[in-house]
Structures are given as C-alpha cells and as structure tokens.
Length: 75
Image (cartoon, rainbow, N blue to C red; front, side):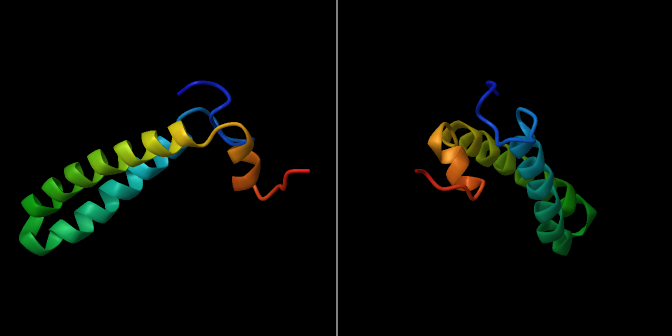
C-alpha cells in the first residue's frame, strides 16, 4: 500500500492484514460444518475474500476520507 492511504497510527496495509485474518476465521467457522477439510477450504476462500476487501478499502480511504473515518470533521 502507498503511504498516506492509512489512518493515523496505522501501518500501510493494516486493513488488508486484519480483514484477511477475519475472513480466514469466518470462513473456517462456516466451513467447519463439513469437517476439517471444509474448515480448511472455508479458511482459504475467506482469506482470499478478506484480502480483496482490505485492498479495496485501503484504495478508497484517502485524503479527506481519512479524517472522516477517524471521526474528525471538516472545517
């Protein structure tokens, strides 16, 4: 990720890493209904979707959007 595309206090790509981990955990939980193999497949798909979501989030939070997300207001 490029510098300036994260919120203050974050390192570049933090959202990507966090959403990848969350996706893997959610996918493993959902796939566990089908046994260990289902949990593994679910974790893989969940991680992939979480990674894509994190990249898209990092790509869209820039400039003034950062202050809005951080709870600051313009003006």
